[in-house]
Length: 253
Image (cartoon, rainbow, N blue to C red; front, side):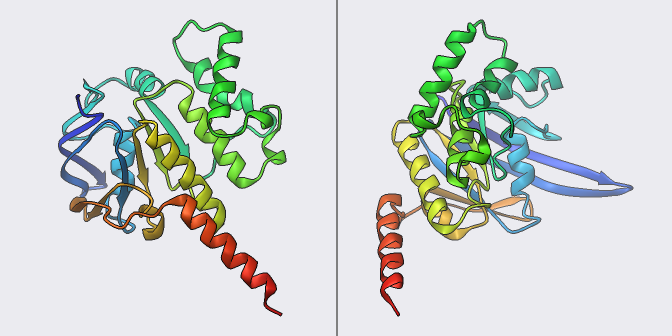
């Protein structure tokens, strides 16, 4: 089976006046179907620049990027936009939900921008199935201000899934959440990944990265470490531990 992501000596150079900034320096990386990968690194490591290229939000200045077997390295902006909508489901730190729009209508949005021929009824049915997949079927008519932070992120995950993309690309998806809600969201990702969904997540949090299966660490625009997570966290077990700790703390006078 072909890799979902295949990077061959990818480079990204910015120009600030007459100064060249080498943000990504010859990165090669394969991500296979069904993987759950965390891309990590400090500020200035190149991870955000790499994420923008993985998400077809930016194009490399050198090298080749194959997304689900298609070379997207030098596509025109309109073509990149079509590929983004069809092949990639985005999950952001800030949720990016429309405040005056219900959960199911938020989930429908990627289908409205696509080139498909689904009827409005088919779009709604698909949106409701995506909400059911993330455990929010009973919240379909709620607006974002009627949902908790974790529920809003689940709506965002459902929106990312609705076009059945080749992969989910998550950018600091737990950055705005408390510890317990962060674990709940990582549990959702683990369940989706167990169903075969490919997930690539950018994070700077070491504990969050331990919920994934593989960690890719960047420094100065290069990959310095690429390893399988040996002692992987299980979200269900971590939730039980957190709740037990919380119950114990409440008993302490």
